[in-house]
Amino acid sequence: AQTVTQSQPEMSVQEAETVTLSCTYDTSESDYYLFWYKQPPSRQMILVIRQEAYKQQNATENRFSVNFQKAAKSFSLKISDSQLGDAAMYFCAYRSAYYTGTASKLTFGTGTRLQVTL
Amino acid sequence: DVKVTQSSRYLVKRTGEKVFLECVQDMDHENMFWYRQDPGLGLRLIYFSYDVKMKEKGDIPEGYSVSREKKERFSLILESASTNQTSMYLCASSLWGQGQDTQYFGPGTRLTVL
Image 1 (tube, rainbow over the protein chains, first blue to last red):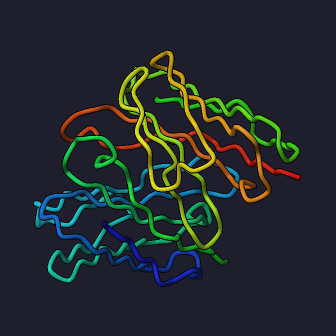
Image 2: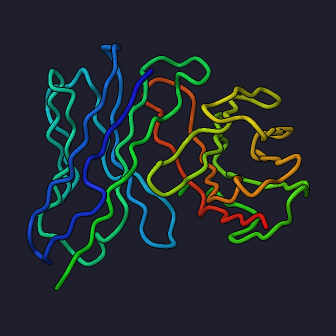
């Protein structure tokens, strides 16, 4: 079974600074997808960024980028130029590339709560 | 935009009551999911459905059942609510197929069982 570990329960960053959230995972599969989801306080969870394991290039979405190290099974999220609206719980998630039953489920980490200060 | 709605944001029930949580999505997604979210545990999958009347158990199905009679609607049922089912329940949906794996979440239902 796959596991996802987020070792930082809480992080804090000053506005306009850069912060990196860590995520490691364990799997025996070679093909999979990794995600970062954001859950703002009292608001719906939304997808921040997605990485396909067979792609060596790190995904980027505006101020959000990842550092995907497949051999190390590491998938960190970097937020540049942090804004107050980035304050949220961030979840790292893993999904098998196979499409049968619960193989298509997401396995989530325990989350990192990010605070953004002025 | 994909819209996933859940019937209640907050719900308070008594031990032993039968509880229905409903989820509706408007984008013709094949897959629908029910998760529960607890502090320090992240999100855990309860049940998953990949088509009408089709369902599969997730990681923590005990004490829950589901129903999917229409493609857009996925219900979570607590047959006899217990205090350890007090939690935040999140519904999600996604398309089926290669690359179509982004899950879209509803706002959540915070259930308290007294």
